[in-house]
Length: 162
Image (cartoon, rainbow, N blue to C red; front, side, top):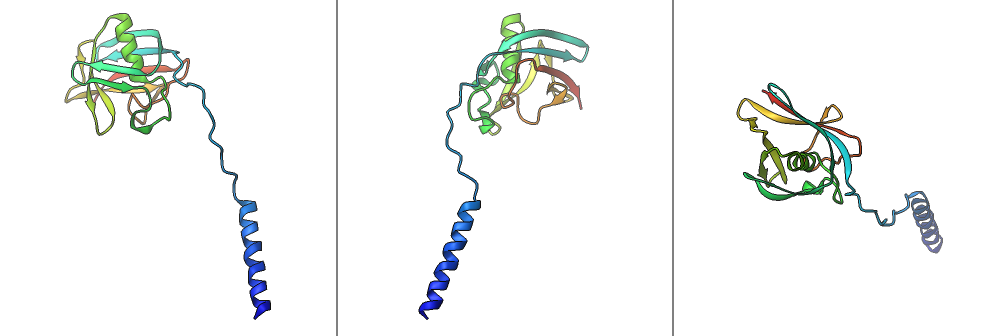
């Protein structure tokens, strides 16, 4: 019986040692540099009748205020999309509007932790259309306050009919 117990202990010890040896190393927390560094992007707004705005904008994630939606953060941390603040498409639109003196409005949806862009330069999406947001030619898979922009990105807000 003593031999069986010793064998069992040896087998368990060997199995545990093998498991620990083959387990991936645990990543140590790494201090990350601030990621909300301003970037220059090109913002384009295309309405149903053509180009409404195009320009290079320096932007970073920040609080955004709309007449309909109020003031909310729009810095990429929305919905837990990014661990720290980053530049976003909706923040870029907001910066373009403030710097180039045009208006935009959006509804805030708490359940999405994001805005829906409803109107740009007095052109509304409404029931028959919406403002699509694309970066580098591809529609973004998350809200405009959640998608991380990089320097040189091309951000397009395009009025799109259903």
